[in-house]
Length: 215
Image (cartoon, rainbow, N blue to C red; front, side):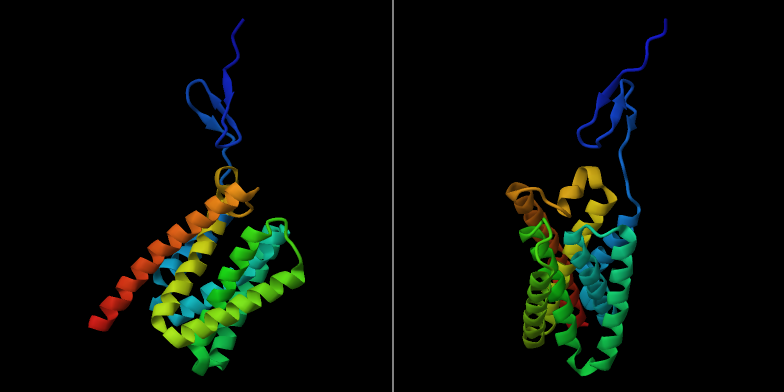
């Protein structure tokens, strides 16, 4: 009688592995790749275009605000795109306060990510709104005061937050904790990864600013 193939549980993918090495059951959600791309653009090239920074920050705010509440992909996408479009429209209306507006949006992104780390179970909606609004206001003031140098920082932090969300959505089995950390250890690890990605993005944008000033 022929023997059935041997399967071994794969801890990283949540699936199984044949004895020959074929991995089965690893989930890859391509919907997260778009979010990941926007996050990379905002994190590493946000200062190159105010329109990109505005739309990316608005989209990130909409997306990250839905995360603590476990919204479906369609709901999160609709809210995110709507927030990005509204951000672009408002930026046109308040163009004179453009840097304050962009900094406020990026600050709100940072606030949404921090809230998600501090309250992984969702917390209060009112508390979330107040926290995000406060971070947005602070981000706007700092950006208006220190202008492009501060914009590079807030774009890097906001973009890095979206990068983590995109990775968690694209690879839920391996990196899902980046979106919904379970416990203080995973929250601390997520915060460390977030800051590391943001620092890299800020370094790249700082070089871009330096080169643009020389030319």
